[in-house]
Length: 489
Picture 1 (cartoon, rainbow, N blue to C red):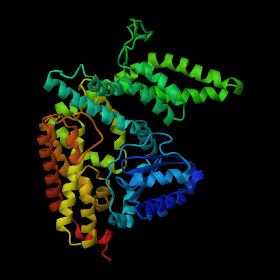
Picture 2 (picture 1 turned 90 degrees about the vertical axis):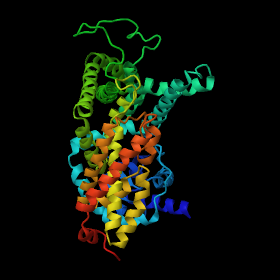
Picture 3 (picture 1 turned 120 degrees about the vertical axis):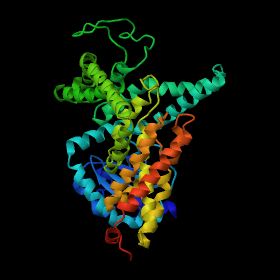
Picture 4 (picture 1 turned 180 degrees about the vertical axis):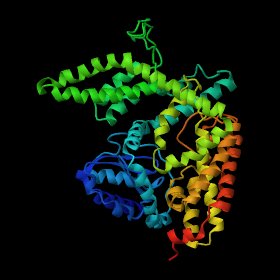
């Protein structure tokens, strides 16, 4: 029965996005089915929102159908079969949490339509939102590998320290450790490939550009094997300067260059000379101009993070955690993934410890606290049932159902949840919490905290819960507003 229901949901979604001929790509994210649409004029947004099981619809650069954790995978697979477009044809789909969205959440559809009004207003800032969404699309498919490699690096570092490197001669241990090292070592190649793909170029050419951004000297690497002076600066070439940001720029630039060369290249010569000229011209421009720019931006990011985290201290923690839900509400939080990747790079200034992520994770805690306040203070039975159905997955780190269906439509409750989260961010800053990987939040965030910081993390999250609860209890519950949006039937 469950498979039949998921297939029916997939059929309804496909019918309301213009059919199989209108699908360009489909990717399953943590809670969303992201669809590349050829002609958005054929999409029936209102009909999509009314489908049983659809929590929300975000019409951005891609059409994002919010289905919830677990549910998205169950619907995405039959959708891929029905549309004849392989799942993750542009990117591999993200690892998802195997939590099934409860059927009761599907009763929120009319209310969620109000959420989409505010989201659609935000999306009209097209240059900013579309740009950030493209950047997010480059890194989202890499998250499973980043999560795995980050956890491997964190765990093996602890094991080496605790055992005095007792396993360094064991084949199985060094095999696992090599994979953690390998992902971050060759990540620029993957970033270059995904960037070229996202901007409609040949992925392999973007990957070639990414080889110039490797942070290690690979045996036989001609440019990095000797101190060759570069034009303009007359200073020696620095291996890997700019890192991931330069790889991102190279992938985008190679895609643009390839498309423009192909416009004037005779068809008979296109197969041979378009990729050749793309790589030659692109690489020369990249090492002279793009790599210095990427290096400058990377240093700027570290300086800003150091200022916010170091100089502003607890005030910075409050600002970061209290404003993060605003990004999440419009689906742009994934645009921070490049920064998280930089911070989790073992070769970077933070030595693989991400001090930003734990602060941002407090945002979910503030929302959970607000949810409990709404549940205990409201008299609306339908609303209380909906809130309680959303809280368990929010505690585990999946806050979209609670946010889209509860706090955002109420407005004031969303603001009080943000303020409450800020207090958790203050505690996270005080304890200098750091994460060795990314991809999880809530209670699952315990898995990626630095060893020995688990109790401190729980305390910070408890403060976020309490802050969200207290601020919402006194300032965020408007019963008339609740009854207006969620009328009892």
